[in-house]
Image 1 (tube, rainbow, N blue to C red):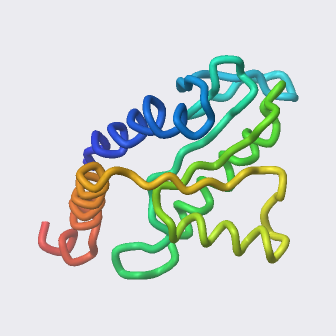
Image 2 (cartoon, helix red, strand yellow):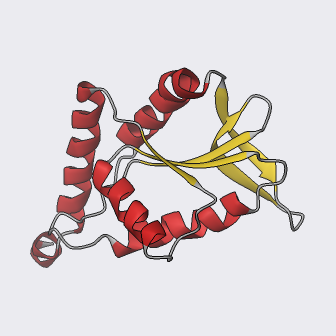
Length: 151
């Protein structure tokens, strides 16, 4: 089973360092009321609840250099909740990978993604980026067809 500690470490760094530096306020992951009555756990919510964000540490491409459709669909699904976060004044998608940001910027330009969501790239420190890339490679190796055929 894939080890997600590197992604959790990246998310913690974003919550504790990058987002507060960028927006000038503190953040934490927490549930927010939705316009239709339920709640959704967002990756980052400002202390006053005015900024609500989802974080992606995924690349837009798979290890085989194909478009990461499942990863992209997850972000789109999470954005549905983001668009309906009650009392949010700013809705943000935070990408640690520039290629994923570029994918969604293209989607916005082509009218296939809402314009009401701020797309933000916050690069990880080199050591943390390497940690995420190592974890991604291990997860990819675990699920590759060649490995499955040898089990």
